[in-house]
Amino acid sequence: MGPLQIKELLQTAPEGQGVTLKGWVRTKRESKNAIFIALNDGSTIHNIQAVAAPGQFSAELVQQVTTGSCLKITGSLIASQGSGQAVEVKVEDIHIYGTADPDVFPLQPKRHSLEFLREIAHLRPRTNTFGAILRIRHALAFAVHQYFNDKGFFYLHTPIITASDAEGAGEMFRVTTLDLDKLPRNEEGQINYKEDFFGREANLTVSGQLEGELGAMALSKIYTFGPTFRAENSNTTRHLAEFWMIEPEMAFFELKDNMDLAEDFVKTVIGYALENCKDDLHFLQNRLAEEDKNKPQNERSLPLLEKLSFVVDNPFERITYTEAIDILLKSKPHKEKKFQYPVGWGIDLSSEHERYLVEKHFKKPVILTNYPREIKSFYMKLDEDGKTVRAMDVLFPGIGEIIGGSQREEDYEKLLGRVHEVGIDPENLWWYLETRKFGTAPHSGFGLGFERLVLFVTGMSNIRDVIPFPRYPKSAEF
Image 1 (cartoon, rainbow, N blue to C red):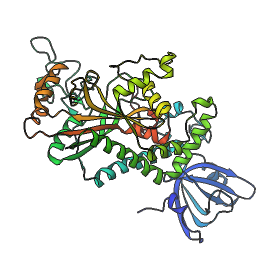
Image 2 (spheres, helix red, strand yellow):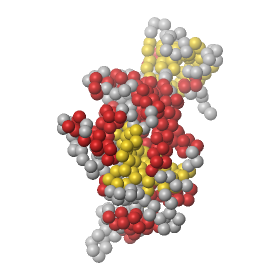
Image 3 (tube, one colour):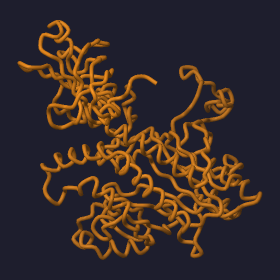
Image 4 (cartoon, rainbow, N blue to C red):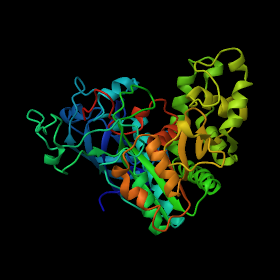
């Protein structure tokens, strides 16, 4: 089982018992009376203080104990003499696993910019900020699996390599074993994919949804939670080329059931983080407050814990797309031409519109439903009016859309019509269409970008800072 971790030691009653610490040095401070070493092993945001007597160890060894070096310390657990924590370790022996030369180790005890830390993503988990983010990310992932398991869902592994484009977006990464310097060509001069590994074009998946629907048509309630890939050239604070998606699909669920599940799901998962990540969230809240000091009052955000509790404690407002457009048309920013993008029925709402509805108008999360068919995907169920579809988007403060979903079209003829309408070759989706021929059923589902959720819960402002090794245009370094 290994030694007790620092998180457990900090909660242990000090009785002078022998303990072994292993971790990385955050700081070392020397005074006339003692040498203080703050050690962290990643199990908690808090360091444990180890105290050695001056002259207890050789000057050469003490000199090697620097920020970033890795140590094993043996000693006894005693009540702390200073304030801030209940226990400390009286050092008996220090063993150095690895040194970190202070002249070249880039993480010194000072504030580093997030841009700089992205350049050293192999080391940034050792900072307080990224340690906190990664522990919260773990807690949220655990809560996702726990939630669906408790609700009777089955975890379905959908393929990473696929021959279909679920979104019809076309921005996909190719998967091939062909020699790019000597591509085989057919008589028409086009690349001959029959000679490729799968005998056809293949890509990295953009969504597990279509395969998820197949699972729901047998197991009733499934969810996927896996990596997805978009080859869109977006250099924004909200886009990644590789990210994780949570996609439940449920047979016999209609639009209202889908909304109820989405709301309960995010509330439960965020509630789990509030309950189990208190120290990390407090740290990130203070970090955010520090950053906000430099901003004008109207641009400052709610304190992080307040914002999270607000989402968990309030019923989400539910309105149709048409009602949302009416609200936006009557809004002050629209009348004063403050919106960057125009407002009118039929537009795809931009982030500024979504945030106005959530942050200014309703002042709580909003679920928008029944969008125009033209701006939504081919698989969404048509409403009776033929103009709108049974789509739903969940909008959150600070980030806009966090969940997108819909009731799926279960009628074979209608679905085939939409496939033709949007220009997809039915041959490529024969298996998907066939489920509407054999025991079709009403069904619904939604997708949640996991990093968007982590972004919201941690209060970070850039999605590249909530995944250990972000992938974005011109960046696949680590």
